[in-house]
Length: 499
Ligand SMILES: [Cu+2]
Image 1 (cartoon, protein in one colour):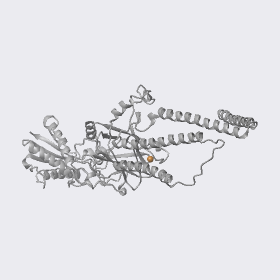
Image 2 (cartoon, rainbow, N blue to C red; image 1 turned 30 degrees about the horizontal axis):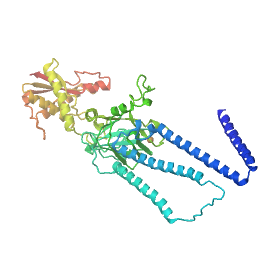
Image 3 (tube, rainbow, N blue to C red; image 1 turned 120 degrees about the vertical axis):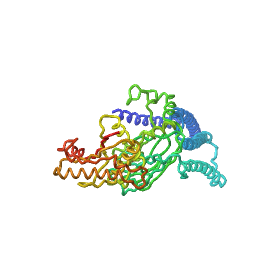
Image 4 (cartoon, rainbow, N blue to C red; image 1 turned 45 degrees about the horizontal axis):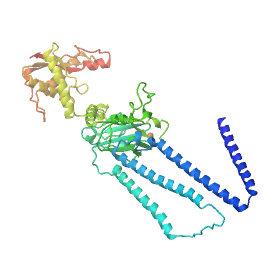
């Protein structure tokens, strides 16, 4: 309805103007024709000047009104080092075009006024002027050169691949999320291969590359202020776009063609919030966080700036810029994807047959705690929970030997301790067989304890300190009716008999 009214108003105004024009023409028809044309030209020229003044005032006022929306001013200050150069480029371009815009408009209307048609005046016919052509070709060309060179300098700063970054992270886009990978303690991202992508290995990390083992995925992007960051940008399915507007970063994420971007964060999230608190538009209450103001809940964000599908909007991630010490503390809390993401010891793990030194040290520390507990407490039994045998036999698995070395370590540290090695089975199979199997298994651990292992620093244990005994299925600690219970029952124990 309101549209119809507005439309009618415009049509009627146009009709009124046309009618007014006709009335003026009729009035002029009574005057001397030349004189009438002169006064019409004068009036048109004057109206043109009035329009010019009004239009220029309108442009100035609107530019002032919207100044806080301009890049680099007010709440839209850039949060990265190179961002200032980019903002500056935009603003210089805007400044130059603004000057041209003002000068040409003044010239246009001023000329229309000054050279309006008057009786006795003759137009100058000027078919061509080489000098003038040169001037108005050269001036824009020089200006363009200046702008392009400035742009190239800024471009080289973000794209100059000189590998002098402090931190390299990787962003992989997929419908509809970003996976952010950090290099871990070694500072280097591991190799990837799309053929290795599985449910457990979403990025296709090559686990034979040791650089991958400490890499971790982060739910948010956390980076320290003042460090140069290289972001490696890839995509798994369709075209995405890595966009961090506060840092003036925007780069396509292309499947099969990694791109990158360099930037150095300049302001922490806290500092940026403090800046925003100066502007009235950030004083309002945040509708998503009642009781808090907009500037208090502000966060830098990463978005996808490519319309990549229906839930494209969901590709948002919080970016936190913090001080160096806070970053280091955050890094310490992150866990390697390889060790904690469910890959370790699966069939996909090329290292599943052995422990890494850190794992060995952690298991030794855990075993020492249990051993000390048994020495000090009433329960003198330590279950050797990592000692396993080949199915139905008494052969120790390779992984079992680590815990037996840990037991050696503790027995060597406590030379007065004597232990019984007790073998237990579940209730499957006949009693006789189980008894014999448990004895053979206990003997296998006994034999391993009394043997020197190549590359190990642990001394073998004197046989007089050890007894091995098979108990078969006589001492269950779990329910033999369930698989979990049977698993508990199949065990080897070290029981302290004197200390
Ligand atoms: Cu996307």
